[in-house]
Image 1 (cartoon, helix red, strand yellow):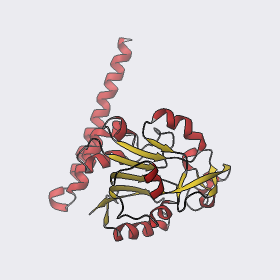
Image 2 (cartoon, helix red, strand yellow):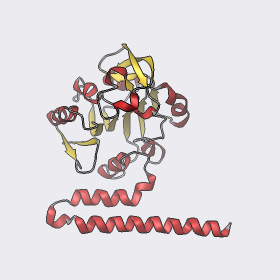
Image 3 (spheres, one colour):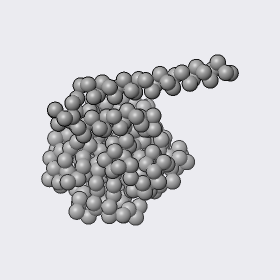
Image 4 (cartoon, rainbow, N blue to C red):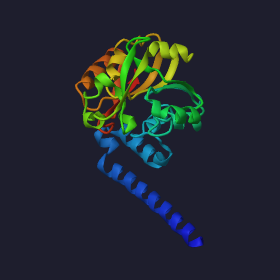
Length: 254
């Protein structure tokens, strides 16, 4: 057993060395004083040192904490919550930093685990453009790619959705969802990963009614990405870290 403990301990040291090497690489490639990349460098170093804490696919939770100075007791909203743990952009905020919030997940396969894992407000309705509609939903074999059936073939994951299980889900607007959750007017973070309906959800939302500081919005490199960016800019948001946010775009108010 002592040998196994030593092996694990050495692997931890190796991980630390790998992270330290990444930080050295960051500092070597990007000179914040010369090239004006100080914010990017600071975030990458912050994320490298805390990557093991993150549940999010692209470290979105760490980006939120970085932008808000590791704020405690904030409020989050997550559309597309999966089981509440897998690829979660908000679990760290809830469990470690004491945030409250609301999450939405229409795919039935996730519901039991989601309710067992999370203590925040949960709905199984599908956040979309209208209240109370019944629309076909495609629950895919790789369930994180599930979406409204009409959007199944609208992005680069179309092939993953050909053999899904179809059933109807009830829709709710983002505004109605927030009201049902009794969300405060100031929301620190909104995460939208709904596999194709992101622009539709945001297009009809009144940004004057809620003060949302940060958003991460999946775009999957579709044409809707530019539509989302234009919409966010009209509502006084600026995009950050486009160079490495990949299939997400990250927005800061102001």
